Structure formats: C-alpha cells, structure tokens
Image 1 (cartoon, helix red, strand yellow):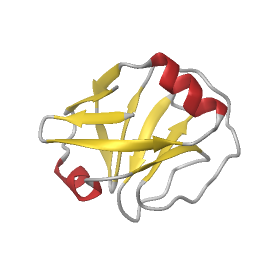
Image 2: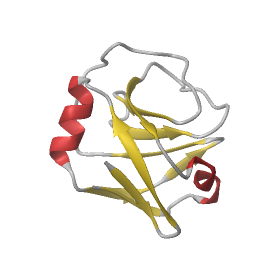
Image 3: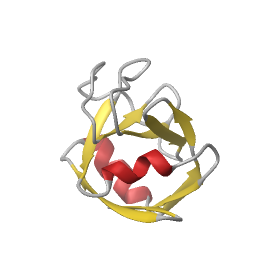
Image 4: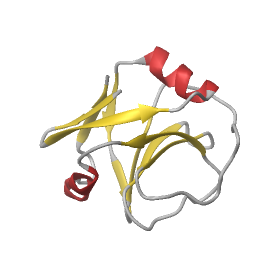
Length: 109
C-alpha cells in the first residue's frame, strides 16, 4: 500500500490480519489528518473490531483504532490512547511524517 502526502510517498507493508485485508479492499481512501504528538490519524470508511489489540506500539507501526474508525501511523515515541490493531509497518520516509500538519490531505492506495 502507498500513503501519499503532498511532499512525499511512503510504502506501507501490510500484515496478514483481517483488518489489514479489509482496509486494502476499501482502497483508495483519502482524508484530512489529525496530528497528536508523533502520530497522524484520520477516519476511514472501515468498521472492524479490535484484532490482537495492543496498547504499546513501535515507531513506524501502522494501526487501526476501532474506537474512532481511524487509520493511524506512529512515527516517534507516541503511544495509542487505547488499544489498536497493528496492520503494518512504514517501509520508507518515516522521518517525513514530521512534516505533516493538522488538516493535510492524505491518500491511501
């Protein structure tokens, strides 16, 4: 999967979870980002239950947050506010996520 921002493109390697498959099936998806510390997220049109929920993540983890139906990317030391489903990992340009601002348009394809 690719994540596109006006300044860069990142490759995301999806895992074998059911949630990742649901998101992949829904592509393309776009939205305006929210930024919280070292995390970006936005609501997506996918409804999925928590799958192998995790309350701790690593930098570069791509997750789905069921409580807000959000696609999330953690690019630093931030941690989720509640349990998330890890759906993949950012493969390149992780440092560029620091350039994303509140309201920036992101597309997933």
